[in-house]
Length: 517
Image (cartoon, rainbow, N blue to C red; front, top):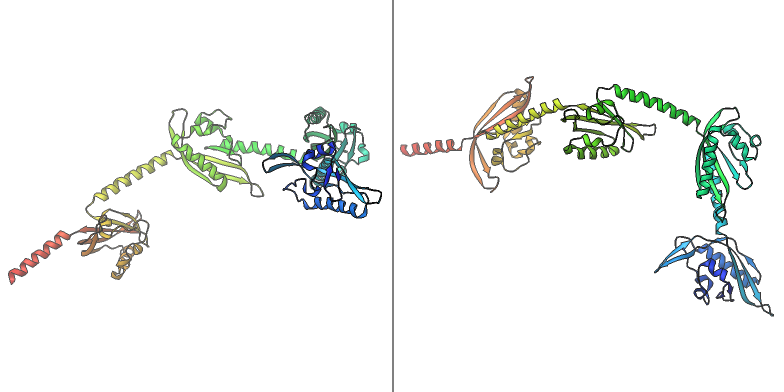
């Protein structure tokens, strides 16, 4: 690119224009520092500053100046005011062109796109640093293969992991082949070739590798493949991790899993296990015998849950994965008679040393008979409640030493209005009665176990809909209620309205008083 002494672009070669992805009309006549858009995701000041300093050096000293390598991304696509950029690295040199008097007439800016070279170096450095870090952190040895020369360079930890020095194995790649177990060699080589043909950047191999003592280590080999600008693989960098201890742990885990499942099969209940993500892993044979699901099948378990319960079961199970607690009652279909029975399903997570869930264990307990008995009791209670509601007496049941309201009939609302009654102590429900030692009265009945009768008590009753008040008289009875062991557990208050009787007595008294006059 040709610049004048004011750093205005005069012309550029076709090669430069192709590299910068611009046309001549876009750059000619413009100041070089204001011509090429800056990637907003990068910090542009450094690259622009390096370019400007180099050009100022040429103008001041009238000598060639080679710039350090800079990153300056180019525009690859435009959509209105939005620009798309592509990463680019440049190696550039600025040279002055002088006239007969020694004055600068032009500056030649020559640049070379070295992006591919920089990216390869960065990738190789990253992979090497990554492998060195792995080698230091785990039981691993790294290596570097020159594919064209078919030579291998052994890195850190080779002796610590496999007992060899780099000289023991040598630089020939065939020495690596001789250490791989014969049964694993073909699969390992084929895995490398397939990865290179596909242009993959990484490939993971598993094989057995002979150690210096003659034993074989189970190895996981993480390989990075480096390609040249033409897409040809030139290097491979790998890290061989000795997984022998892990393999042994897997075998031990398999044995433990076998014993664990045997234990679940011995349980009298239906039982299951699930993975940490909630997916079912196993049902014992009792489940398959009851539900008719094929042995070993874990998918489709929700189909045997009663349709009215299935959504609740699934929702509660997903919530349990976060809360760590699961307990639910649901109905499950017996495939033999087609009937549904009630089961209590409970599950607990098993955690590792770090507190992470390893597995869930759950059981189903048949509670159908208990459920039916409970429903019968509830039905009896509902019938009793209906009978009490039809009683001419207004009733209120207070429970415990704090006299918590557990039951009232609708007539109480007429007597005292729309208040909050249930689950509240009497002292909060009727604060206006404290002046009459109401709490003392309740305590006497509860603790002494004796009945108290209060007759002809006048109230200003409030109609629950209209809010109008009228005078009314009631006879109150406070009775202790005992449990099956004859211990007092509450106080039953009954109130019978005697307004008509009181008014009639008053009327008779008035008539008698008039006759005496």
